[in-house]
Image (cartoon, rainbow, N blue to C red):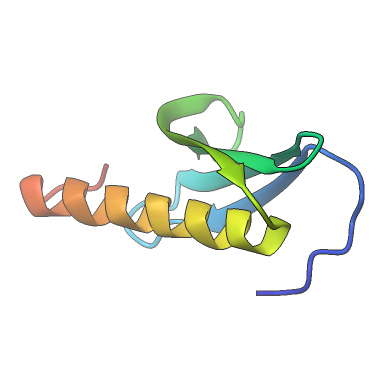
Length: 89
């Protein structure tokens, strides 16, 4: 991961999904006065419309922790989804 040094919020980060090239993972980091929160979604690659809302995570102390926590949440969701269904998403 790269160092996050933008001070503008919200910040959007896109993650390719190995099991389906038509979707992306999206992490949106927002800053409150003393903490960060993130929204984790799976979106359509072309239209960027939300396909599935994965998680909202609040009260994170650092921006880097917010990103790592969000990526882990997305990975956990995809792993759980893959364990129950043998087809992409």
